[in-house]
Length: 276
Image 1: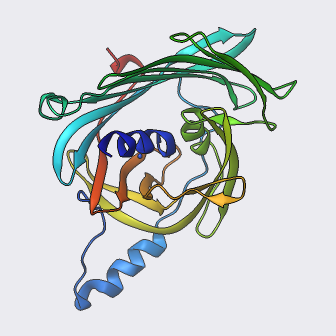
Image 2: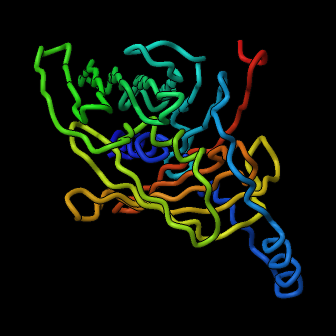
Image 3: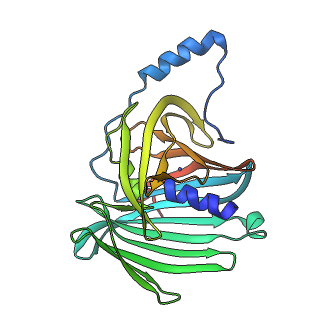
């Protein structure tokens, strides 16, 4: 269960409240707090992603630290004759959790600088005894994708819709979208050779306290996905994002049946020359 929930954070927030950021207001200051919320402005997004960025998230399971997620933009590379952002997410459990169930995963994507869609997605998963090394190449002109599993040698070709994202590029694509309160987002995401529809709605704005980073202006979303017009039911995912043009994911929480809760909180940020 823990493995599935951590991976769900990566896929959606991939991308993302026991560290809950909401504030408890007394009656006397509720009106003032509501006024502050109304004055928060969601800035227009950046036109392009930064060429270098490093974000680190602390992951907790039922409030107990179990590992971390790092999300990085590692420059612009040439892939399939196209300029693309090199995106990487690493998910690792700490010593405590690894003694029970070890996770050491790496996800890599190449996102077209001009088209803002995925060109290639690489998966290197090590979860307990489970292993997977696979690459999916996306032909966004012919609307075809080619999947190859390097461990068992299996390959598969399948159709893709225009401008489809993979689970990692989807998170960065979101940061480039113009959004506001009540505005709905919708786009296609490929995961395990299946095409999902990802939906989201900006539900509220607030000033939240992020552990180690202090108070931040943020907006709240609870995205969901559909597969073949049926809503995917694998737990509730919600998150807070910064309202400035960088649109950084600040806090995320996944709640699943049997009172299971996994949270991820942004704890480190580095850009450009600050990245070692």
